[in-house]
Amino acid sequence: MEITAKMVKELRDKTGAGMMDCKKALGKAEGDVEKAITVLREQGIAKASSKAGRATSEGAVVPYIHPGDKLGVLVEINCETDFVARTDAFKEFARNVAMHVAASAPACVNREEVDEELVNKERDIFKAQAEKDGKPANIIEKIVDGRIEKYYNEIVLLEQPYVKDTDKSVGDLVKETIGSLGENIQIKRFTRFRLGE
Image (cartoon, rainbow, N blue to C red; front, side, top):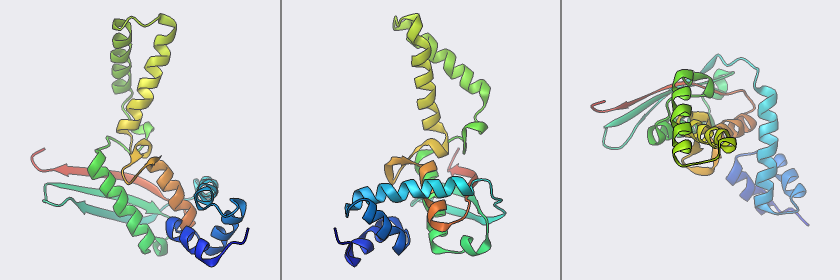
């Protein structure tokens, strides 16, 4: 199948990937734009994992104030160079993360920051609920593990479904951005302010 400039432009507009990457992805996907997006996402994730260990000493602190001035967020996002930190793509990514934090109210950035005592308390509650429902002892642990995973998805920023595209997590968004910008990026911390809290 012939890959046209129009197809490449459409894919590029949807993904932000480079022209040659788009053309190669369309070739692999035999001209199917949706399949090509998947190919690019897979490549972005592969690129992201190879950059994960690199130092991130630059970046930005990005504010987001929700209309009505009753909810605000500050997010610190780090990258490798000041050059990338000043790009429109990085700024848009940072603003989207701040908007997500405003909308989803995560408790922490990653699992490592979750208080182990809190997780154990939730585990006990889920176990008691399963026992009360009369579930067999041999599957209670599986039920509890599943509910703990769901709990992490609710409170951990990187594991939450991204509010603008619930088919991917915020962690997936980070990996895609690493792939498109070519630098390691880390969401370092955030603070969420609500009037009266």
